[in-house]
Length: 168
Image (cartoon, rainbow, N blue to C red; front, side, top):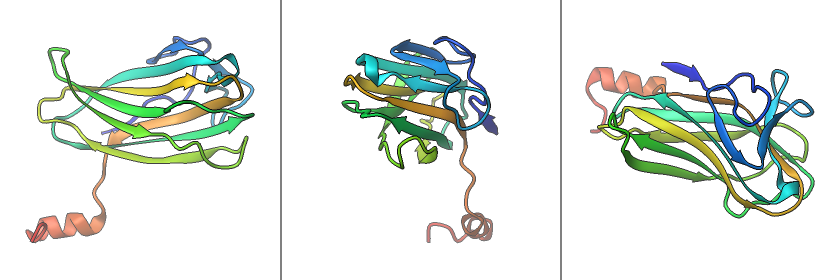
């Protein structure tokens, strides 16, 4: 199961498979791959967030990656990537939250990291949310090429598991 959540942003805030609110929109003036990226507009202040929802397999390890860049004097109170695990009845089960470290050289795209979490035993979907909290007036933060997939165990782990010695 490999799912690229988004390879091309569309115009406006309600992008294909994503819903955004606050000071966020797709733009063409900065992108890692394709023609557009998503920008959190710090120069406007206020808040901004975007999320999408996708099916998951219960009790499965997942990982997400994305690319980021920033410009100006961008700052946000507590920017986070969140996985909100949901059951088949639409009830939130739990949230895996990761503080985002805005790093790298200004205006240069870099992979933000690999974010790992395991879905709860009764999860049927996950809401993947980028929430910038309160942005101070200045700069911008961009994301592109978001990917969410079941984590693939390292070959050594797979070998030990097949030999029945994992966890000894």
